[in-house]
Length: 308
Image 1: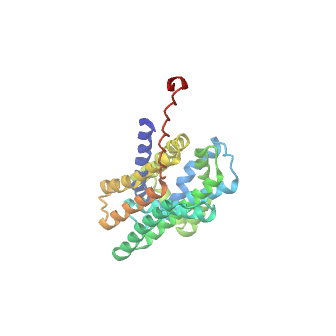
Image 2: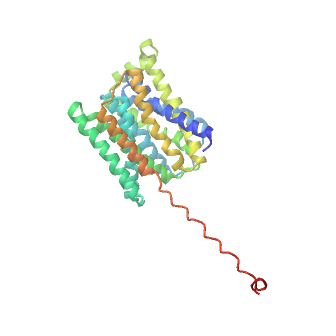
């Protein structure tokens, strides 16, 4: 990668890492299910008007929208609203990588290498440590909800692979049209019309400014700018070259959450998070084949004249 593109990849990781404290700010005002609907509605409306639909089968478009848009963010926001710290959420959500590898092996018949299996074992061990530790010191429900969000992301990844969109960014924009109506209906049923009205009717008040700014950050910076740059890099370089930069996301997420909210993270959870990231890196990296040494050049045989 060129230096410019490396810096762009780091910029995306910073944008996505800051997405977690921005989400925490937004959830202080918006109910979690309503926030999912509003987030994607702000993208879906201009997409339907200005962006042509990608040339992919409708079933895979819906699958990406349900997996990445609906399940991932519904469970993630519910988990954060239930008490999941934003920094820890950025770590646990990395479980989507081993989930994707396992599900691809089951449903897409993709073969697992020994390195991938080892990476999955390390990552799952880290997740188990976090779950066991949280069960002792705090509620386990937020961790379980965040893991469900990671599983939804993995299911969306499988649908995205099957879609094979010629323009990945257009697929990202159009998948935002899927979650809006289901999440709005679910918000009406679970959170109730009164809670929805209270959050929307007070959106222009001074108290709601941090939440609105957080929501706008999630939509404009994390989604449009972040995915726009990321998909450009993925189209320019092999995925194995670009993907490791996403491991910077939880680093930024943990640090920014500590800086903004003074949100500490337990040493046990931090070490388990490092294990998750190491497992993801191990499973996603490829073993380099040794370059064979050039064959020795045989010395030219002496000519008959010289021999004589």
